[in-house]
Image (cartoon, rainbow, N blue to C red; front, side):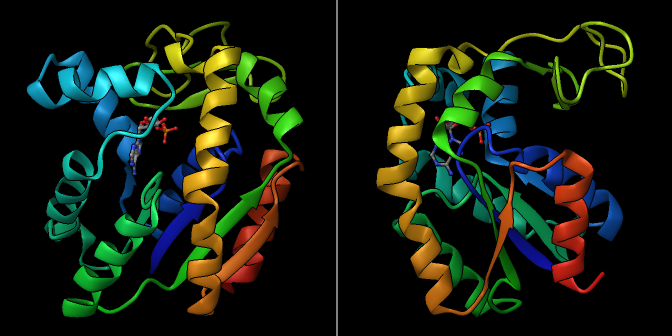
Amino acid sequence: MKIIMLGAPGAGKGTQAMMLAEKYSIPHISTGDIFRANIKNGTELGRKAKAYIDAGALVPDELTIDLVMDRLVSDDCANGFILDGFPRTINQAKKLTEALTKSSGEIDWAIDVEVPDEDIINRMSGRRMCPSCGASYHIAHIPPKKEDICDHCGAELYIREDDKEETVKKRLAVYHEQTQPLIDYYSSLDRVITIDGTKAMDAVFKAITEKLGD
Ligand code: AMP
């Protein structure tokens, strides 16, 4: 199954993507996680991407598209994948369609997790991330079992630089301008599943898997 997660930053698509990856045994590919790993490891890509990410802007397509295309030809993607955070521009979506048309065919579903902007701003302030395995938590809605410690790997959780309120507002503006048009793009291919992302995490997951036909 080849799935794309659409939805604004903070809509909870990363959490859902992780759960879906586990359920369907397919890799979860998050471009945000790849960039953050590169920043942490001090790579050239990380150095270039950091300024854009911290400012709430998109990393340019020329640094992003090849990265994803290279990842999609890995053996573990043979049975499908979940793309979380890619594509984010029409240009990226077209490049993905082109690449998939040449190989395994078009994506199966684009899951649009819908959450109003005000809810997102409230959510982001409580978000905590694991620097080691990429798991995300929320102090009110998805708290870790032990405060500030990752349930999966025991690392100390942190607040992302780009989760600050002003940056979140910028990211939402970028989302509405550049990424939301992808909903029309994938609707025209008859691939969009729209999900109410304001519900609890498990209810959102149930709604998605019901629509995917389990
Ligand atoms: P995320 O964790 O998906 O919210 O991504 C964090 C940041 O990484 C975004 O705000 C962008 O700056 C950058 N980023 C992630 N994916 C992409 C993409 N497909 N295109 C451009 N920038 C991206």
